[in-house]
Image (spheres, rainbow, N blue to C red):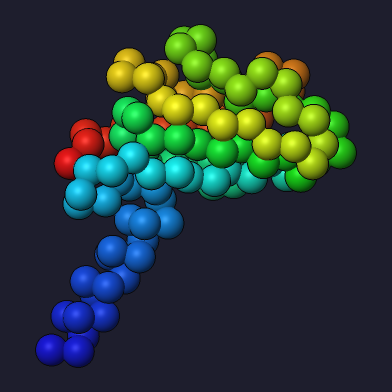
Length: 112
């Protein structure tokens, strides 16, 4: 019984940390850190209408931009952050336009 409860709790905590919308369908805010020329986490589960906050902890500016150009943060200075609320047709792959080797991926989940 305890093992099943712990397994269910772990799944709920795991989904929350990925930024998956709650059962109530309310939009969520997910934080992605930019550090050491990488996005962390690099794979994020979100729904259209959710907001991603990109926080730049590197000493140089970065961007986060959908490869299909459906959304972008613009340039984010060291120590700054930028918010993006995902449109209905959001691009799933993103990168830094200033450092194209930096890449990430969104798993777009349907809202509940």
